[in-house]
Every structure is written in structure tokens, then in C-alpha cells.
Image 1 (cartoon, rainbow, N blue to C red):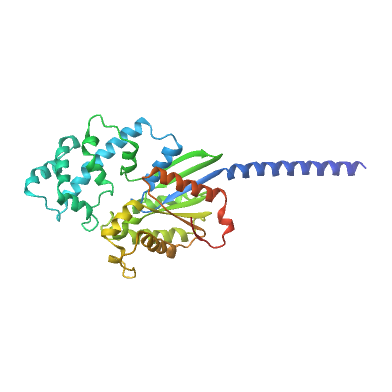
Image 2: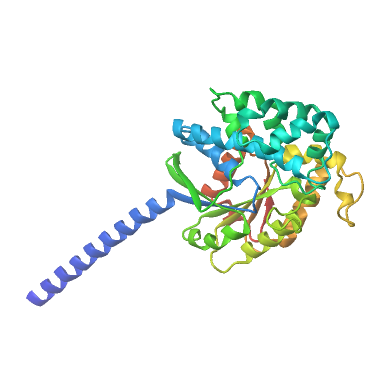
Length: 348
């Protein structure tokens, strides 16, 4: 009887330990399920950093006073260097009356010494035309440079304090890794942004661990633009190639891929003057905005080699749009919508 009693006690202890382990595993699983890691990928100037700024504004109490000061410096530099790059282009010939202003801007060490010259230059149709044709002229400046020029006096002021609209348009290359973490509806979300330039991509592997989903940003307006790194490679070709490589990668298998076709506002205006049929033989002439979107979207779908693709058309500088899109993205991830699709290219 004693032997049976010991055996029974031993079994009870084992059952107790098994139950404790099961409870611990349930607790750990619950904690893991309440954490989401999103990785932002894409080529340079696709809008990843702008999207991260939007998330910081919406979910992380915006920008500190120190960050605002840093963006002030960045924006003033964006304004000056953008105009200088236009003026340095050999194909841009300014009128004789603006030669002195050109000299002042090119020799300027700071914005304060040349803001009036920048304003006069921007009023001239030659400069505006050069900005509009920056892709063909291979002038590597932000698409937001026109906004800087329009607000030159305000941005150059001694007491200038950047607005959130200014900050969203500031152009600063991401080097290394940036991330934000916030909680929403009881879920802890970490969004990781890595530099999109070729020299930064070797760092991406360090970010692949525990990734729930990948958000790949593709700039819609880059179909007739060249890479800043070599001024030869078409940006859309580079983005498509990278998208195919990443979705085929054996290093990580996220639960879902989310494609942001970004800069829809610029794209909508651009295709009127530069229709897709000018650059793609297989594209029909005079496509509407929606059909042009569909054309680009299909190109990415053809390159996709992963499992579960969700596509959104976005405008990263538009807070309302970003909030709406991110809400849909979050719901997609948290509700495990992918489990109900077997092989999926799904557009939301």
C-alpha cells in the first residue's frame, strides 16, 4: 500500500508540475500574442521615415522640443541644398537678371544670407520648370522641395519653429535603425525603420528576428526617376527587384506582407504630364489614375514570392490617411486574417 501511495503522490507531483508548466506557457504565449513587431522596408526616399513620424505623432505624443530643433536645422538645410542642386545642373540656365542671385545662393554657407535670392529664383519659370522636370534632369532633390521654396521666408526666420506639416516633409536619410514602440488596444507594437539606400541594406538582417509582419513602401512617383546612388538605375526597377528578393528571402517568414503604394498625391498629378505609356511599352496610353495604380500594383504582385500580400494606396504626409490605413493594417494583423486565405494576394 505504501508503494502505491508513493506512486500516487509522485504522479500528483508530476501532474502539478505539468499544470504549472502549462500555465507558464499559456502566460508566455499570451504575452507574445500581445506584442507585434513590424518592419518597414523599401528603397531610399520611399516614405518609410515619414510614415514612422506619423506613427510617432499619432501614438507616441509627437516630437520633443529637442527633436523640433533638430528638424529646424534639417529643413533649413533641405531648402538651401535643394535650390543649390537645381542651380548646379548644367541644363538649367537662369535669366541674366538672376545671375547674381544664382551666385549668392551657390556661395551661401547659411540660409539667412540668401533667402531673398531663393525667393526671386523660385518666382522664375526657369527654376519652376527645372523642378517639375527634375526626374529627366537627374536633379536629386526631395519631392517636397517645392514646399520648402514656397515657405522659404518662414523656414529661414530666426524664430522659426517647424510645424508638424514641416516635419513630415523634412528629408533626412535614415542611417542605422530607428524604431518606436507604443500600446494600442492592449497590444504593444514596435515599428522598426532601416535605411533604404544600398549601403544600409546589409544591416537589415539584424532586424529580422521575431518580425510579425513587413510593411514594404514603394513610391508610386518613381517610375521615371533614377537612383540617387548611381543616377542610372531606374528607381521602380530597383524597388521591384528588392521586393522580389525580400519576399523570397529564407532569413525570415513574416505572417504577412503589407505593400504601401505611397505618394499617391504626387503620382496623381505626375501621370497627367508624364503618362506611364511613355515609359512602358506594354502600357496603354492615357490610362486613368485608377488604371495607372492598377498597372503599378500588378508589377509588384508579379514580383511577390511570399505568402499573404495586402496592398494599400497611401500618402505618408497625410495624417488622416495614415491613421486610417494603419488601423486597417493593425486589424489585419491582430485578427489573423491570413489564416482564412490560402494563397493570398488580397487588396484591402
